[in-house]
Amino acid sequence: MKSDVVVLFERQAAAFAHGGPVAVAYSGGLDSTVLLHLAAGWARANGVPLHAFHIHHGLSPNADAWEAHCAAQCMALGVPFTARRVTLEDRKSVEASARQARYAALGELCRERGVDVLLTAHHLDDQAETMLLQLARGAGPAGLSGMDASNHAPALLGSLDIVLARPLLQASRAQLEAYAGEHALAHIDDESNTDTRYARNALRHTVMPTLARAFPGYQERFARSAAHAQAAQRLLTELAQQDLQACLHRGEDGQADDGGGLDVEALRALSEDRRNNLLRHWFTVTGIRIPSASWLAEMTTQLLEARHDANLLVTHPDREVRRYKGRLYLDPKRRELAGTREDIFEDAPFQHFQWNGEASIAFPDYGGTLHFDPAEQGVAGEWLRTQLLTISFRRGGERLKLAPNRPTRGLKQHYQALDIPSWERGRLPVVGIPGQLLYAAGIGMDCHRIEQGRNDCIAMRWVTE
Image 1 (spheres, rainbow, N blue to C red):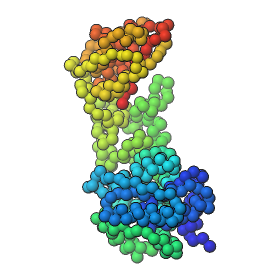
Image 2 (cartoon, rainbow, N blue to C red):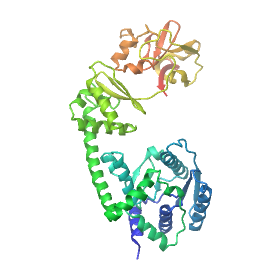
Image 3 (cartoon, rainbow, N blue to C red):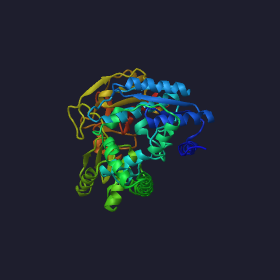
Image 4 (spheres, rainbow, N blue to C red):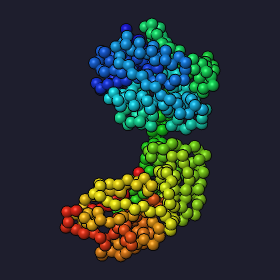
């Protein structure tokens, strides 16, 4: 008769089994040793290629011996073994730094071996620990949802294609210990697991034993609470998705513009809780870290109380939050470029260059690449090769005529007509020859040198890095 742990594993395996290669994150500890043993038997029975990946952090004097132990265990099971050594960048926050480095290395190994399902040995007690840690940090429903049986984690693994699966999430630590004893599985004991300076260890050795005595079986009840929090979070996400669509800026055709920011007045019409829910969701789908409650409150206060024509700027570690023309934007943080400002530098630097037929020329000092695309109408390539060209940020007074039947306008007027935010304008270079502008990034080519009917017409195009 199969043990409960085997039944749990096989039930979960049915959800992620697809015949492709699977990998186990194998530290050598009891939990991952049980997982490897279960996965090895299942993989043999089902003809699934299985790998074991071990990450050597170099934090313990025993790390080399652990790696050797893991290699030997995998050899005995007939499972291909790969170890990867990592160096921690932040020694002040060892737990967080080790976790980040470990998952990044596991993601690399998965991509190298063509693995798209990575198994970890998280179990019921880990779920309870995670919820307690999140409670201690004041987390909301998203944090209290705990871990899923499987999910994608591109921020950790560096790929959207890898599934992070936890087939033992419904098994308790006691069940894993019983399984290891039944099969006489050899495993290592990491001495750092008893160091209560680390938050998770402090919970494991002080708080959780007390909970177990006072509330036997609390882990299962915590897991039910996590499931309730997950359901609540799903509803909040659905509401946020609806609100996001309602608050996206819409163009003249009435279609939502994903790059056009959020309408401030639409945000203002929402209740505070609903607005905060939307903003957190917006940050999440944009791929940046969720701000703290205090930071979010400060941002929304500035957003709603600033005068209507103010160009609001709030700095986030990952982005810059800006307001322009009644819209809220999340603008990527970019490196400083010489001579850039949201207004005009009359003495902005410029650079001479010649075009020799290249498809593109990179200009790191200007933050991007200038492309030269073959076109039905454009500047004659033969003429362009003979010119000493300049690239610079706008210096003031530049004017551009887009077509013979359109008026000549200053760049500021073009930017306003094209609804280009003021902070973007200072990073858009212009290209020309002495006394004449040929191209302005974000606007287009000046028509005075445009020809058609030739087979060498070139249109310029700027791509920001």
